Amino acid sequence: MTAIPFAKMHGTRNDFIVIDTRERSIPHLAAFARRWCDRHSGVGADGVLTIERSVIADARMRVINADGSEAEMCGNGIRCVARYLAEAGALDRLAIETLAGVRETAIESREEAWRIRVAMGATQIERGTLAYPDATVVRVGNPHVVLFVDALEGVDLAAIAGRIAGEPTFADGANVHLAVVEADCVRVRHFERGVGETQACGTGAVAVAAATRMRDLLSTPMRVEVPGGTLAVDFDARGEATLIGPALRVFDGVLHDDVA
Image (cartoon, rainbow, N blue to C red):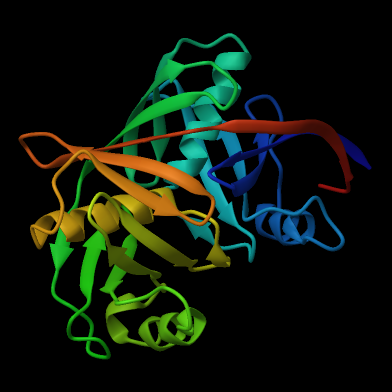
């Protein structure tokens, strides 16, 4: 058995097992994530975040979902990685490589939950799915489907997500979000591919804000209320998004795993 240090972290209760693999990689990462993300027999998490070396940025982040699949980007996870690296001695401003490209992070506050800004880049908005013509498809490095509804409660989000995931447009699945626009914010429920319903989705919050902005329903900066807390999304003159939210370190530990 190999001892693997880790940190349990979360951003608005979207929780992760964070592991620094710059000195020692973990083979069979999909199986590793399935084992340790299990909330009954493992640590319990929505996914595993590994920190790797990068030749084009300060570090590289990989996002392995609880089912072992890999996501292109994670807006809540990258804030956790930025905090992890900062607490290990890195600068407050970092460039972090992801499958969706390099993202810039900046720590705005180190008080308690911390507050970290992420440059999320431009969003790409497409027409709705065949199953839900009124849906808004938004790509934030990964695919999202936003459905505006009258109420978040009493809706079978898993069933909707399953129907959308079966469409040819989303060969690798999609993250699905229900949104209710109020006077001063937008409230959201998230269903993430490879995980299920989660307390928050950072890229999903950006997708919802982009769809809300496109419909001219709210101005920015926009407050996005998710089950796990509050996120803020803003857009610059070029339409590039910024995500702002907390990153909490819950505890540190050591996993004993046969990673060979």
